[in-house]
Amino acid sequence: MSRPKDASRPQARKPRGFPDKSAAMLAAERELVDAISAVYHRWGFDALDTGPFETVEALGKFLPDTDRPNDGVFALEDDDGSWIALRYDHTAPLARYVAEHRAGLPKPFRRYAAGPVWRNEKPGPFRFREFIQCDADAVGVAGPAADAEMIAIAAEAMEAAGAARGEYQIRVNSRLALDAVMEKAGVSDPAQRGTVLRALDKYDRLGREGVELLLGAGRKDESGDFTKGAGLAAEKAGLLLDFAMARAGSRAETLSGLRQLLAGNNTGERAIEEFVQIDEVLTALGVDDAAAAFDPSIVRGLDYYTGPVFEAELLRPFKDADGNEVRFGSVGGGGRYDDLVARFTGEQVPATGFSVGVSRLAAAMAAEAGGAAVGPVVVLVMDRDRVAESSAMAAELRAGGVRAETYLGSSGMRAQMKYADRRNAPAVVIVGEDERARGVVTIKDLKAGAEAAAGVEDNEAWRNERPGQFEAPCSEMVSRIREIVERA
View (spheres, rainbow, N blue to C red):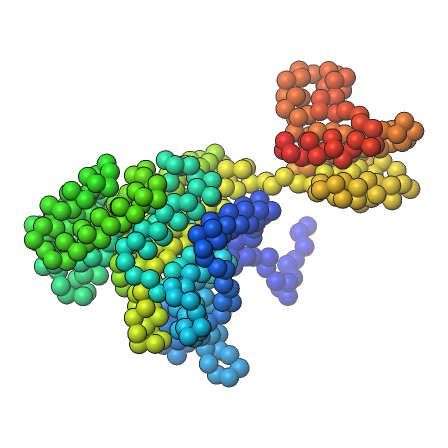
């Protein structure tokens, strides 16, 4: 007979979009933040932490015009009646910081930041409401050379995160180029421009045919929902599609195609010159076509950006916990935004930046690692009356730089071994009466033992051979364990 439920007990349920993080995920995030931050530091950026909360005025562009501004962000009313919100990204707080401290800052001001951000949006697979971003921004510097440097930094950050050349690409477009092709297509109405940009932004997912429908009358998706299109004539839609598909095998070849498409348009000529300067600086910095490509299909929130825009795409596929191949696509992005500081000061301040979505990358790394971080070495307790000796051995291992713990439960050896296995321990240390009398310890290399045991055909042979198990003098315990841990 089942027990009746106690209505007073809370339900053990995690809010959607706020994942619990395993040791493997936390380790992957720390490793990525450290590696990417080191890249930013080498390029001359200084660390800055602006804290998790900002006033709703500072985050104004993300907030709706309502009495309780919590759509898109998580907001609360302070005790003085004002509204504050958890930061949506690291860039809006930077704009506030620069406006507040501009008199005492060097110009340009180069800063990097790493930490969680929060978005009150519908969660989905690898789409969280809380996630870590790692940003670098240069405020007070104009011109394509600064944007090219940020693209080069993005490429170096991807490599520091573990992606080799050919396993990632920084895809670059320009607001000027998008403005130019809109002018040539005769798209001037702001609402229609927004519809066109949203349509082009879906090129990777929907392809030419899907985007063509969205540029025309509209498109019905698999569920039957209809999205109204931009209402463009076929000729104008074709020009925009040709632009989105203008990417070629190299930056130079893409530029050649764009020159033809944008010929005769003043904005287009400025866009081509911008691309040329970016290409020259990237080439000088050793960023080849494999690392960074011109891709006119890239569209990022263009109410936010004012110049070049770019996305970091992870090309290398990963396996999830079920062995399925996963492609993560975009894991970072950035561009030029010259209007954010002006919201506070009324004066335009040029700025450019790049942000890595650390949580998405960490999810890929943790999945590839099998989801389990290497655990501590476990010193087993064979005699409850001698637990202090086992504790001293674990302390000796820790003093020697080895992560270690003493088993302090009440179970026997079999259960202790099972515990070590569940902790993903690289090794266990055993000292019984016989070992103690001879001044030795028994060490079990659990990974080597598991690999060797896979080739042993019967239990008797396994008991006789004891794969991965050996004895060592007590004086050599730390060095022998360290060798195992370094191989794990």
